[in-house]
Image (cartoon, rainbow, N blue to C red; front, top):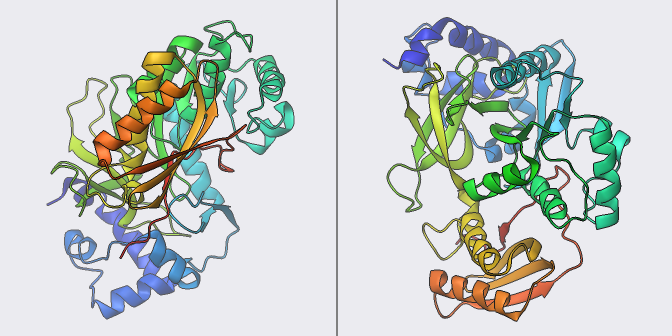
Length: 398
């Protein structure tokens, strides 16, 4: 028997009973599947369907539970489709908030609301300005105001930290290394190269925070470097994927013990990764996730196993190895199976050889028939969430 299901059987059955009484979507599932809620928990759990954002969107009115308490809502970023309004009660938000603060305290006993800044919070925007505007003069003003708040911890996407790190390295922004102690990463996959770079420039430790708008913090990195599922709140499953990414990689599915307003039961995040049990030096015994660097929608169309974000990042790193940080930002659009448009925000030192290195990387990886079109822009704008999306395929599945 699955040990997590066994350990949380009472909580799960209480949740399922609530949904049977207050959630039209799951009431219908229990009835049509003839699920006996008094049966052993494994018999109930594994008969429940895998749910994706598509099903939530299609059955949204039935999917949200009928509850007599106030709810809070926020939109997903829509990086895998049309945004969905995610609903939580105030008690659910409190439980999630306390959980992530406990994880931060594992790293740093001095972290507090007074020295922690979420880079894209509305209150931060009011205090320091539009940090999503990457024009250098605006970045200087915003960063100076940011430092005036004396942050010890800052949370944000790796791409934003990279932008400021490059300006610091080039002497365009003033920063005394070590003032900021921790950079909490979320919203984007961060490679080891990216983490090492921002850690060197800021002289701060990066920490991986893996979550979604639907679940908030689902897994958090420990000081030993493992991304632990928060097993007091969540359970993770790994589904086989049709993409040929190796036997160990699958799609990550989460189940939440406590989300009642908008239940997350066998909810497919469509992120790619590997789930394992690790005897971790930090003492935690929960499941560990190793992210593979993308989502099912990030596979380059026409291939079975090439993740767009990782593939193009590797090409950019080849340019950087030759010419330094000469690319301030980039985005790749796959317009047809063999046609790619690369939008580039050029930095100092960018030249025609950089373009050639990128093109050769793409041709070697995707075939000699690939057409590569370069487009140069003044500034690349991130998503509203602050994330900088690397790759988008506009090729429809057949």
